[in-house]
Length: 177
Image (cartoon, rainbow, N blue to C red; front, side, top):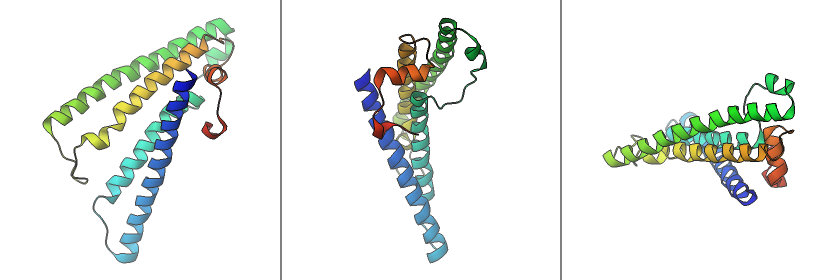
């Protein structure tokens, strides 16, 4: 589990960093071209939005790992450790099932788009390429939820993410504060 977490963390951080850097760079370039030179490049805005969406969607997987995704803990906090672990397992399991359902649909849609050969109007490539992050992030979410659930039952007295972090550790460069 530790090696899988490190691999996924490296991919998450790389996509988040690259997507944010590229998206902001393209946005700044478009603003400079528009307001300084009174011109522009037609695909820059779509490129900036796509890069930022990729970064933020990959951030969702990172949020599951770090425990910063939104949820309501009032009932769980009032329960003893074992019932709290059961409740957290049900909640995380529901999120896992939903992510798996969406992943199946996203993979089916990606296959369909590839089959019919739709071209992105701004980029001039298959629509599959800008869309590709969706099946990837959904598979990442399924894996992350499964890992957190597995770690939860090794330390049911901890919050799910604390149990996960205790199990896999946290490299200093991989921790988002």
